[in-house]
Image (tube, rainbow over all chains, first blue to last red; front, side, top):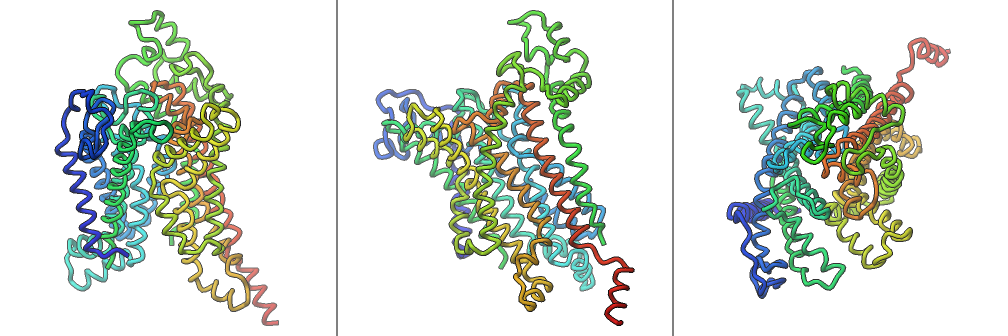
Amino acid sequence: MIPRKLAIALGVACLLVLIGLGVFAPAHLSEFDSDRVYLGALDAPPFGTDQRGRPLLEYAQQGASVVLFPSLFAGMVVGGMGVVGGLLRCVGSARVDTAVQAFGEIVGSLPRMVVILVVALLIPAGSRGLLPLAFAWAVLASPGAMDEAASVAERLGGARFVEALRAHGFSWSRVFLYHIVLLNLRPVVVRQAAETAMQVTFLEIALSYLAAQENQSSFTHADNVKSWADLLEIGYPSLVLDVPTGHALALGLGLVAVVTVMSLMLASAARAR
Amino acid sequence: MKAWWLRPMVRLVAALLLPFSVPAIITLMIWALPGDPAEIICPPEICQGTEVLAARWNLDGGPWKFFSAWISGAMQGDFGKSWRLDQGGSVYDLLAESVPTTTALILAGLLPLLLGAIGAATGLIPRRVDPVASAVGLVPAVVFALLCAAIVELNYGAQSFDTEGSLARLAFGALVLGFADGAFAGATTGVRALFRTERKQRYVGVALLRGERPLPNMLPNVTPALAGQLRARVLHLLSGTVVVEVVLRINGIGDLLWSGTLLQDFGVVLAAATAFATLSAALLFIQAVTEILVALVVRRAPTLPAAVAVAERAAG
């Protein structure tokens, strides 16, 4: 088990790296430079260059700007829905439980990628972006978060727990916000939010890579912006051909690892004492 | 107390609605997009006779006419024509070509999950394996699939689309589906947690005292939860087929859906999404029926006359 302080430090550090990359992303990539083609990280620090001599750092920055806000937004939506699910269980109403279950059944009954692709069809070519897809993903992930938070609230005692705390003279806000949400739902809600943020990032990489493989525009960003999937696409030939693009693959995988570590550490930091 | 039949009923209703609601939503989307739907197939600047085409493809009478014609055709096995991917070609032919491949991929991908679930339930897979499985499961499907595609290309080269190469792609695709995105880890830890919780029940302790094995006692009671977990796993696999099939170049229904989406081919998307919806509905139906059967057969309390007769026999 990783100590809580270390988990917080690592999680926040990874988040700051992503925010730093995304905030300082250039609007356009640098000009072509045929003298600096496929340079490694040592020859063109910090990450080397692509097939046109442009620094891979700019790919990493633009990719971070593509995923940063939508993934955090999706995480917050799922976290919020988890809180709602937990609090609704504390209300102790059978009708509300049935309505929540029906919502979960209908929303969670289809494969997520199918729904995402159908939503992607609605986005006009001129205004493509990850945000609507991230929101759709968050809605699809919400029933799971609500269900898990509801289970935690039920183990806590549900409506009887609220009643007991009220009998001790605690205010509604203290009972719900402090005792239920902050002390008990926090581990579940933060973990679900962090996992969803990670999944949305991976979704962007997958969708952009699939589009790039077919030489088509991505659903998630404009054509003049590069995604982390472009790093994987540049780097992939190094696995099967004698092309010196291993540094691009390493950078792409490294960024995936940063997102994964961030998600794991934030979830670990929020675990119950 | 909450009625036991409520959850299965919600699932049954959702299962009945799903194959109709998905094409209905896509149909509404076609009309929600700016412009005339017929112009997607036949843009006026490059093609003439848009009105005739619209009439022939049922696009001239609004969404209801299109939907009712499509759904009645689909019930007879006619899924309409492709709008762009194979313009004018039968979507049924495209589906017939891709569904068997995806079915094989899903079944092969399900194999490690079933083995993992059985291993976790019986204790053959120890708990110390869980962290390793979780670590492997952190790898996103697209990265896992890329590595597998590289292995196939390195080993088969130009022959990677021959029979042997295609089988290798399918096998690696199943491997990716089975292990990426936490599929295997979810199956093992989910089943293990389920049985661990159930083992704490009093009846299991009583069964142990009577010299019985716990698994046969627990199995009937955990069957509905297992059915729910199985449904979630299959849905996860279905979702993953899009990425796996495109990256590994497997001609399945996920690849078809992706190509249809990229080219805005609503004919293909409508049929492929409906196929996914029908499969999802079948899974919901199976789960609901399992829950109903368990409730009626396994958990049924003895009826009063029978209970009285048993008591009288015991007293006598």
